[in-house]
Image (cartoon, rainbow, N blue to C red; front, side, top):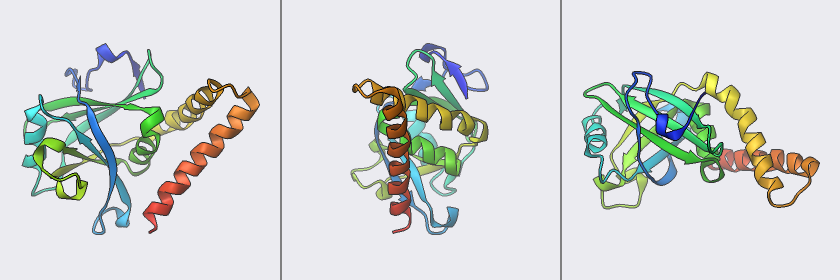
Length: 192
């Protein structure tokens, strides 16, 4: 995982990666792909990024898109994990998705675990149901980042618990329990 300040965000091809706001993060189950696993889905506000909408629509028939991805830790706010997505086909489109660890830890965990994420635009449909919106499936190789992430998640969760006034030993135990509970809830959903 690379460590940058937010204003220095560049893709592997040195393209500037503007941040695109998250509307919501959900999950989609694909019975024909990924052994029926529940795959994280990020819905973006693309009001000022029509190129992202075009990328999604251009992949409607083929479902997956060719993109280079990079995980980044914001060095000024260690609760922010950033995913840079740099599409190279059918045209260039580079952007970043800033995810707050406190809100989206399990989404980050599962993107890294399954190495894929669906990306959607809320501007491409009238429905709040993510299953009804056009999407593109992006491969996100995360082996190296996952090693860092596993440690970082525990450390940041422990820090956040300590801010609530708990002593270090208690906070560490609570952090592990909280993460374990979140993962168990996700796998419960996956096995329904």
